[in-house]
Image (cartoon, rainbow, N blue to C red; front, side, top):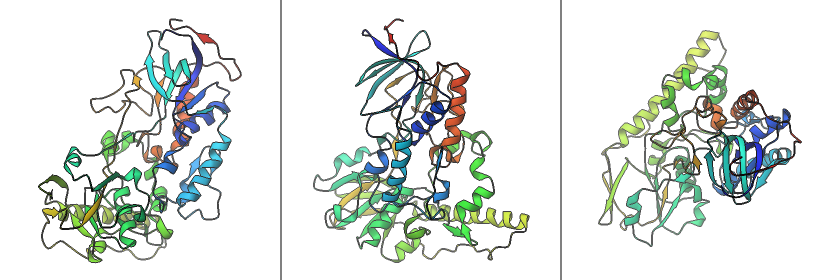
Amino acid sequence: MTESSTHLPVAIVGGGQAGLSVSHFLRRDGVAHLVLEKHAAMHVWASQRWDSFSLVTPNWQCQLPGYPYAGRDPDGFMTRPELLAWLAGFRARESGSLREGVTVTRARLRPDGRFDLATSAGNYVADQLVAASGGYHRPIIPRLAERLPHEVLQIHSAQYRNPDALPDGAVLVVGSGQSGAQIAEDLHLAGRKVHLAVGDAPRCARFYRGRDVVAWLADMGYYDIPVEAHPLREGVRDNTNHYVTGRDGGRDIDLRRFALEGMALYGLLEDYADGRFAFRRTLGAALDAADRTYNRINASIDAHIDANGIDAPPPSVYEAVWSPLAEPEALDLAGAGISSIIWCIGYEPDFRWLDAPVFNGSGHPVHRRGVTAVPGLYFIGLPWLHTWGSGRFSGVARDAEYLCARILDRGVPPAGTPPVSAGANS
C-alpha cells in the first residue's frame, strides 16, 4: 500500500453470526477491533433463503454468545421471519464495532507479520486478522448449464424464493442435500411437477422414540466430538448434510414417498445434449445409502437407550415404501415441459481476497481449530472448524471464545486506544 493506513489491533472480515460472536468476546475482554462487512450483517439469512425456510435444528440449539433463544418454543424450528427477528436482536447487541457496507478487496500478509487491508472505506493495517466470511461463497453451476436453452430459467438454490416466482411448467431440481430436498418438497407441496436428480446426501429421522433425533445425539455427546476424534477426521468437513426438515413442526423427508406421490427421481445428472439430460444409474444406490444412514443413526440411539436404561417408546426400522423399477437414464427437456432448473449442488470457497500461505490445493484454509500456521491469522464459521456445531448457531460461541483467547495470547492494546495512522512500511 502506498497511502496512509489506519492501525487496527484486530480486524474481523465478515459480519455474520461468526464474526459478531468473535466481536462479542473481544468486547468483553476489552480488545479494540472492527468488524468489516461487505453487505448488511447476517444478510445471507434474508437474501439467500426461500420464503418457507425453517431451521433444521431445534430452537434450543440457537446459542449465540450472551443471546440464547428465549422464545416459547425451544423444541420448535424458527421460520424465516422468526429467525430474522432473532438475528436482528443479536445484531443490535453486537453492532458497536460493526462497519457495514465495507468491502475488503485485499488482505495481505506483510513482512513484519501484520496485515495490510485494502477496503472500500480506506486502508488498514491489522496486527491480527480473523476471516469470518464462512466457507460458502461462490454458487456452483456446472458448465453444462451453458448449453441449455435460454428460455429455460436457471437459478441457484440461493436465489429460490417460492413456487409462484417460477414460470409455469415442470421444475428440475439438481441435488438432494438439505436445500435441494427442502426446495423439492416446497415445490411438490405446491402441486408443481418436480424432477429431482438425487445425489449422495444422507438422511436422518426428525423424531425417534419420542424425541427429536438432535436431542438424542446431543445427549450422546455427538455434537461435542472434535474433528480430530471423528472417524473421518478432517474428511468429515467434506460431508453433505443429512436431509430432514423443521417445516410445520418438523418431519422426515422421504424421497421414496415423494415418488409415490408423483415426483420423478433420477440419479446423478451427468450431461445435457440434443435436448436431453443424461443421468447416471445411481438412484437406487443413493436411496439405499440414505436409508442405511437413517437406520444406523436410529440404531445408535437404541444402543444409548439400552445402555442407560431410558424409558422410551419401542424401536423401529425404516423399510422402503418405494423403489425404482428401472434406473432412469434420460429426460427430454421439452417433452417433460421443464421451464425451470434449480441448481442445489452447493458452493465453492473464494478466499482470493486473502493473500497468505494458508490454503490447500482446493482453496480451503488449513488450520487447527481456526488457528493457522501464520501467527495472528484465524478462521471461524467454517463447517467442522472444531465440532459439528462450528458452522451453526450451536457451536460458534465456543469457537469464538477460543479464538479470542488465542488473540489475547499474542497481546493486544485495550479498547479505547485511539486508532493511529500507519504508513505503508511502518
